Length: 285
Image (cartoon, rainbow, N blue to C red; front, side, top):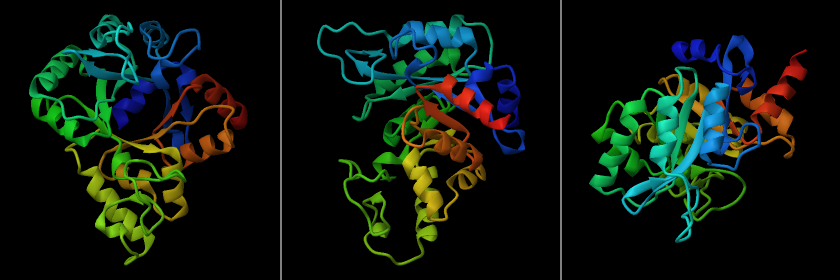
């Protein structure tokens, strides 16, 4: 992605880190986390990120009563939460710059046609600076039909993942050790690398022309231990890799950050981007 790499040269230096070969890796401000002075998913946090020219920001959103609100969980009745339209107005009013905003869709139920159309219309004025991500590939496909020019990102966690626990979705540990209910995971019939290559190839095609694939960091690390280079596989078809979520102060965070950067991750989602940048800067001295 040469154009994006050029744009990152003007981003806030604490929102990117250097990878081998001069490549810049983006530190995505999870729910608008930057200085820590503002609540998560708040308009103030988002505005701060655009003012600071942070490379990449993420906020959560969901549909509610015919509109869209900025919220991770379903808001309790009567709770005041920001409207997505107000968040996108901050994007529209911000001077041109390197900052891009991921809208992390939290709705699992299929969006009605009116909801899809309303979301596309909200994003249209800023579609060069925002994109929509979700594990609900059915909603991403609906959105692409309405606006093929709006970038989307897919997280395959409902189909294939790993983090040492069995989740409600996919709900079963397959024969290769991953959370996977696909028939290929019923028993071992091929080497694990071949199994992962086949599954990954299918998932990359779940939504046409995805911009990025978002992978739980333990999943990304486990695939590498099993000999499968997910980043190289995605890069070969023009897809960026975002690994989530790693924060300063957690177990082996410096080592894991350095490893993710060195093994091809393009974006690292974090609540502590500035601490990450400082740690890697000290390491490189």
